[in-house]
Length: 617
Image (tube, rainbow, N blue to C red; front, side, top):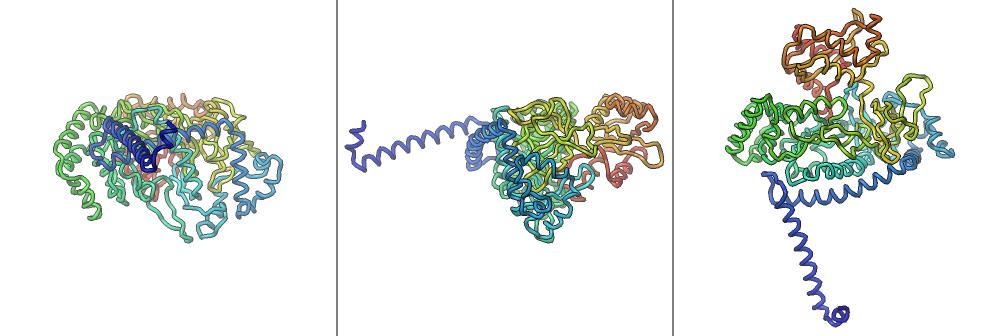
């Protein structure tokens, strides 16, 4: 063979090589074509978008597998990677204003940088950084970070106040490379048939951004329609770009999401930051399904919705509908009618028989939404919680996500430097944090983090339970937010305890939403619990909820026995009250994508809004 090759002319060799390349190329194209033909496909795909999605998913699967291997390697060397991360952060930022104020250069000269850091640096909360953030906002460089900030991220305000936190390019790239890529691999392994050539309804909304004096963007740091990366993935989504450009009218934007999702019988995935958004979309389809079907039949956006939107956006949306589709309109009407005859049961699969999953955070306070969905409108549809993140950055990834939203998260070694505050005495003067190797499985801890955005030994406010270790990395269950505790006398009733009490104390009553507040003025301190339910409250509802609270939290029961805390007060609000509160919070600046229902209210105006819409008014 070698002799034959040597005897060939250059022209003959070129011919042979060309034939080989052509054969390989043909084989690859043929293989990819077969994959495309055998995959479930969205009816709204074009040939170009089909190929784009196929190539993107293939490359993501390959890159995701590599990212998962890197993650595992880092977890096996968790302590060393964490030490390296902290040292690098101190070196990079020793000449920043904060680094000079807190002696980072001196820390780096110590034999054990980690212990020197923990011994000398204060445990911090957001007020500690207020002055530094104001300097960044004014345009000053190298205040908290040596590299330039990309924006100031506004938190959701669930715990009572909205904070502004520096965001850096390093945070964003880490979120994608060490977060999204790893969980793409996890989803591919958990549900191998999920990643086909079907479109996703991505429930994202145009962010409301402002600008600081120094020209820095202020707003949510979750991925949104105005991001360049978002636009590159638009062909994967059922909603056209015009739908993502709707500003200042989140209900109208949600209607457009539902309309274009309903248009695609072969929709594959429903995606949102939090599982409360898919529930809202499905509830909208259950109530306004006929209206949406009318739009599909006419090939035209509903006139009432259209009147609220700019004319240019309406024209583009109508164009994207591509004319009337009476057949699909009839299918939507039939699906909604059949589901509503069963109380909404199985609506998702009746609308989209090939729906593969709901990709949304359903842990912690969102577990109730996931439970309701899987018992009702999304019966039979897996719900996957894959990423644990906050405005402060990526925290953890789910390597083996459950199919009911019940995930545990492996802390990402290169995303943050992690410390853990035991809950036994979180307010003690001499607080001592623990490192990963000092943790006890089954115990709860508050996370203290040093992130990639200039926060050092920062009390995140998240309480997690250590489940196990992956290599040396803690695998945790999100429990609750410290700011969402009911705490009149030190009883510290948590979100899970309140949720458990509402379920146990109001059995058989469909509760759509609930919240609470500490009542301390003019009477014996007590809890006020507000619920939005389908039916009237039973006559003994307050007493039943009180008994359930005592069962859920024995410390609360002790204080009740001493009469230091009064009996809980229960009120039912009218249907739509929590939606009104949602609109109010969006109007105040909270991003719809970040918005969570506060299970403990801290704002009296929010309480008053609900009270004005209660049955007692």
